Amino acid sequence: MKKFLKFLMWGGVAILNAILVWFTFMLFALGNYSLAVTLGVFVAIADWAIFSKKGYPYRYTIAALFFLFVLTIYPMYYTIQIAFTNYGTGHLFSRDQAIETLLTDTRFLYSPNNAEIYDFKIFVKYDEQYKPTEDFLVLLYNKEKSFLAKKPQNIQYDAKGNVKYAESELMPLKNDVFDETYKIIKNKEGKIIAIDNGKIKYTYFYGFDDPSVSSNSAYYNSVIRQKYLKVINLKNGKKSFRLSSDYVYRKFSESYRVYEAISKTNIIEGRKVTKTQILNTLTNTILEDKDGAFWDYDKNGVSTRLIGYVEGVGAYNFKKILTDPKIAGPFFKIFVWTFTYAILSVIFSFIIGLALALALNDKNMKGRMIYRTLLIIPWAIPVFISVLVWRNGFFNETYGIINKIFLAKLGLEPIKWLNDPFWAKISILIVNTWLGFPYMMTVTLGALQSIPGELYEASSIDGATKWKQFSKITMPLLMVSVAPLLVMSFAFNFNNFVGIYLLTGGGPALPNSNTSAGATDILISFTYKLAFEGRKGQDFGFASAIAIIIFGIVSIISYFNFKFSKAFEEVSR
Image 1 (cartoon, helix red, strand yellow):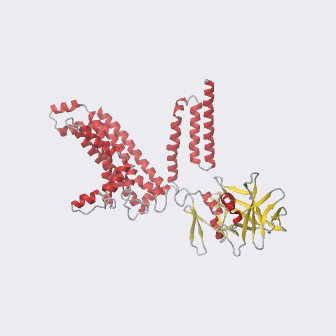
Image 2: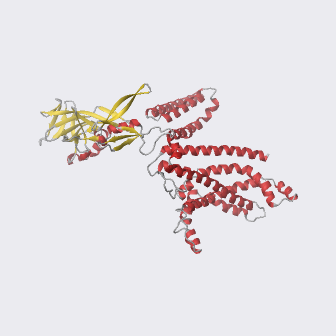
Image 3: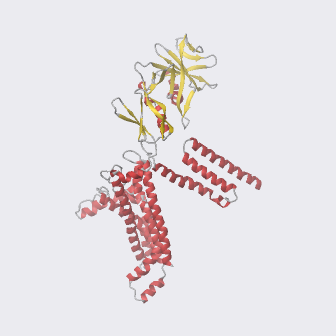
């Protein structure tokens, strides 16, 4: 039994190992090199821990290592990698993918003057269950000529397995026979019902505006057209024919590519460097490759941006924080406000929490448990509910309780709580203090009860006042427990995205800004807007650069947190 269980265990390890190795190779094949390297390193470490005696102690941490690599190390690496690129709206593809789009996209086709136009019909081979197969023929015809094309043999696929290009030769009709092989079969009315090459019979399957085969339109659109016809290029000598968008893809038209890829070799620093460039076949000019995009020029020299791609930009995303006035100004306002918001949120919530804790710590106070329970409620209610109540119930300019009842009773003008930069910041501090004081009160209450009562008795005998006891005994000993939590609370508020986003959405907007920055935005909400809600589209590269700055600041805060913790531990001794 033990041998059987051991066999199962090692079999499971082998299968899991094989799956992870297969995933690693698949990621390499799909071009996701960073995640492939991350997974490959994890597999190597995991195998070392499993099969090596030296790695035995680490065997039980493999699961944690997996999540560490996939959920922590890889996102950090990916963020750093993106921060040094122009990845974002208009720059989503690699350079090779951008070139491939220029060479294959039907938008970049042109038809010459007096182009030949053909209607077409589809003939398919049926299987034994009389179901249509993907073996088909295309009959092109007009009043003068007819051609037949077989299912394309020259097919190219993209990384996802989709057909990106297909090519087939056209066979001309002579005496009801194509290429001396494919013979036309007609019914009594002279309508073509099948095409036979002596081995396979292809039955008439689909034609536009033919109600007799309209039931086959679903298979035609989902299989034959989707997989083959939309990318097929039918060749007849030097002529090319494709489905034409000018005829809503109901006809084949003579058409050609506007752009072709050419390789050009330059001498750079004494070395031959070959680079793929794009040639406009109509103007016989090479596209300009600048700012991570391909640009074309017309006869008047007017440039048109065709398609962008992801490229490395070095430290550009970091530099423009300092050098671009439309970014630097809003960024430093947000930077200062982020610190102000985090510091004031901690100070206000701590002062209120401390005052309430001191009051509730008084043993002579009656009903302390009831008060404690009631005061913890703001902490117990989900944050998003509290914030939305404050936003719509209190700070609404028209229907909010503060403007409609309190200020109206006093004869004061209503306050633009969420639309004025100053009052919007006040609103956020009020809400964040409301949400934060129960935590501070609870923490402080616990810390107060850990202070020995003998210290207060001895100080009373020495004649110390209440203030002396508070400043010389309570606060120093209280800070031993509370100070590290205050630092961590500062770090939490530094990245408190939910409160800002739900209450003001970062608004009101800052004037003269080149980004979507708002007066109450903190760095993390500003990063979110850049990445997902930018006025000019997403800018993942710039957002990643700011995320790295935030990471650096939080790391420094964490470092001082450890320093403070150590310092106060020494005070307690």
